[in-house]
Length: 119
Image (tube, rainbow, N blue to C red; front, top):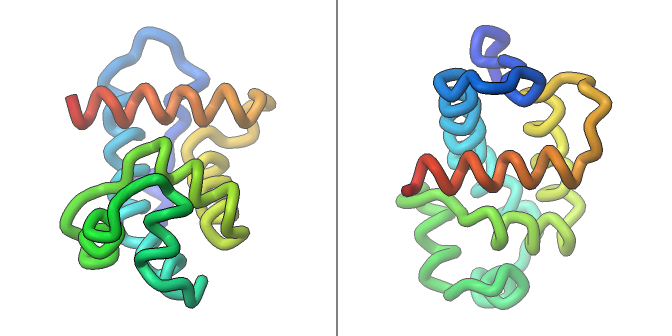
């Protein structure tokens, strides 16, 4: 991830423009990095789909970068696969910096922002 895209939106309140740009940056980084991380699990799409609570077709589309992953599916995969967990944590740290916030609160904020982007 390039340095110019890194910002600290979660430390600022009431700045929707920056929050949205951070959410878009997270979505783009996930779209680019997650398929590679999933390939490294060496699990078939059917197994990944079952563990994420989505269809095999959704996982196949994610691997082809046709659409982003939902926040609940991403969190489910992060719970199962250390590589996905490391990716999520790296994105949280890259976007929030060392804010000292509880990781669950940061992930909740990311989930809300991703919902806004899709909405």
